[in-house]
Image (tube, rainbow over the protein chains, first blue to last red):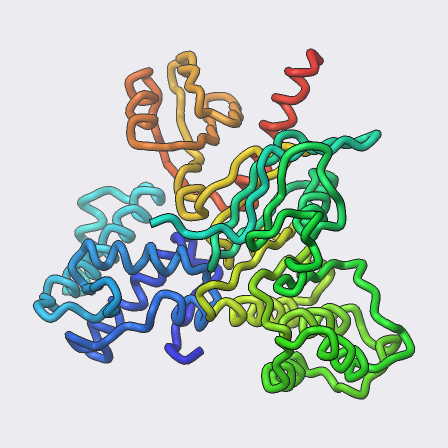
Length: 121
Length: 303
């Protein structure tokens, strides 16, 4: 476990999304600053014991989001012009979306949810 | 660019008194992991044995690493490592004896790798086979296959009957063997978790036929469970990608494949309320697929 990725077996999201999250977290906390080379797909797959195609998909989606840059034959690295603020906001948005969904399934109204959130701001 | 194929089975047919394989097509690209999934008796082991050249098809062709099987199996087997449950080791001999034996046949044997495997598998070379537990036997046979560094690894149920710790050791070493880009794995398993974790491609077999064979990400992405409420008792639209349906009172749950947003939209327009759209695990897909395949087979048989 060279790269220290930890996955939860109870996390219901697809594996590629969990890999994306772990990479984005490393970038967001500054462990992987812009221009940091990422392990090759095959190397990361062997390290975390996940199929190559799943890691490939995570890289593809992160590339599409502009978080990482891949150049054929040269490798993959953290994008230079990465907007950290935006990345962190996106992470927050994801948490909020999750909270909203949970509230909905518990029958908590919009007003009540906003009231609950106020406690923390 | 086309990736070269490690395995190409074309329209294989094989008839036994109580079982037959029908028009099996199977392609495994170099450098990938293919998982074969199917219930007991679906034909997984028969296909693996054909890939190994142990059985010849009645019709169709099997090409492995560029060699026609079974005719050119001698040449092909230099580069294939096979691990099956019923592999026999010499009971009264030690693991070291078997290692020396395999090494004497295959010049590709890697001593350093073998020593590393012994260590990570927690095996003692001097141990006699008859004293080994099931887990240790599996690890020993895996070691004998891996240390030759074959281009293709074929595993029949490699994790069956293993405790979680040994299962992890086995899966880890299977994945480590793939660090070289041209090496490939074909394996069968009942354990859908293993298949979901390490396969790049999944092939579904039922009743001697291939039900589906595709890229795992596309495969897992296509299946959804849709939870509906149907307050007015409206009829459900008959969509062709509905594989399973369960209805209790006003609540309904559909299992669909080839899902896209259009499906949910279609249901809404039919006056149904879509409560949730959920992804499925491979196990759930497996059960649904078996259920559906069974229904289709009995329909074909006119039952």
